[in-house]
Image 1: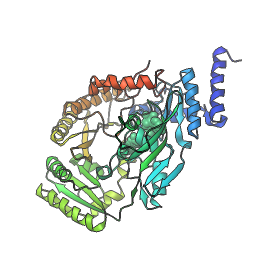
Image 2: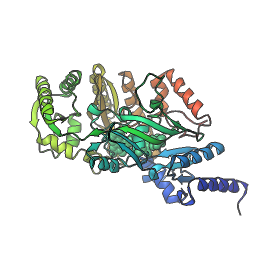
Image 3: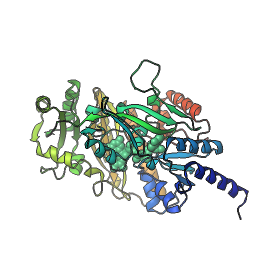
Image 4: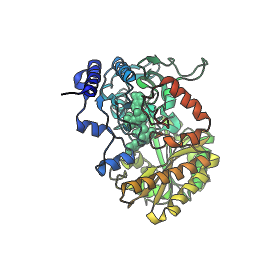
Length: 480
Ligand SMILES: Cc1cc2nc3c(=O)[nH]c(=O)nc-3n(C[C@H](O)[C@H](O)[C@H](O)COP(=O)(O)OP(=O)(O)OC[C@H]3O[C@@H](n4cnc5c(N)ncnc54)[C@H](O)[C@@H]3O)c2cc1C
């Protein structure tokens, strides 16, 4: 027989079933366990060691904005945590159900509403899978120029909620640069829309408030994104440099001269060894892959200019073939066997800073990992892959192949390395992160990064979500 508490829980379950349909409120243990975690290293350790995982009470699968709104009203009334989940490919614990509650699985919200061919704007639901979306657009000669390495598992909503970057961001921008407008369900169930276009002089940009909010301010339920025509040509090339600093200087000049390549990826020796095997060349030294796209004649001129700049910085042209190989295999490096996995201890401590600061940032982080963590045979590798007119993102990783076995010891080591790398980032005028997000993992350092400005962000959170039901514990908002 149910006790009073049991009846209350049953009542909430009944309300949720009434909102979305009984078959879409799931409490099967296997489903809860599968969806309670994302790609955060810690959650994989829990799973591998068969440790207790904080589970949601229910996985709820709405199909429409109205259903999301009903679910939010119920959770708001009963003060139940809600964790939105796209593809669960995030690496920061953003979609992990640290405090239980309802896991709002958006996978049924996968409809394309419109492709406006005049304006090249897509309007779709957030749960559409990245690969499905790209294939659909490509068949119409179009692309969403956001090509993340997680395209097979991530969703459109996750691209925006985590402020992602794709491999062609250097020309086409990050997800945040492609978004036109959003519909959002607020924590109390209210449905709001941002202005229909992103560029205006009608007050501050509320659109960007929800981009990167990682499910802490509301649920993104409808998205309009800028599309691009598939380019007539894509020209690829690989160039070898005497060292990382020469390569960075070449990249800087390419960007400052506004030559507009779609891709520049500069691999240090560690990253070259890991990622550029199979190009047909010796996987050694410092190598840059670059791609220019668009009209063939224009692209050829730009390619030549870029090659000239690379040569002036000591670069040697390795030709088209290794560049093409890289393009055709660009996602392989993020899949098994090349993608690291538990029991290895690893972390992508990526960041972004100005050209002035990037040299010292690279040198200091490399030295930290290779020298301070020598006793663990720690390895470091870096590539620079999202270039801006003012600076560059550094995608760097540490690896420890044989870390401590004890769960607490290894977690402390993990956190210590993350903290030290993050402080090197901040001390070099860089940020905690460029495209993976903050999630649970880096939340505790948000105040250190933002200073007093963090109070402004917290004020927004408290205004929109006074009961703190939206993804508690993420972005450093804590629990209250
Ligand atoms: C192998 C690998 C490669 C990767 N490569 C890249 C890359 O190249 N570029 C890149 O940017 N990232 C990359 N990532 C990170 C990750 O894939 C991205 O952050 C991705 O955008 C997350 O999308 P998702 O749908 O899986 O989101 P999830 O992991 O499900 O969620 C991420 C966060 O967004 C929130 N969220 C999701 N959907 C919504 C919504 N509709 N409304 C409100 N909040 C929401 C969640 O609550 C969570 O906080 C990679 C990850 C892996 C594992």
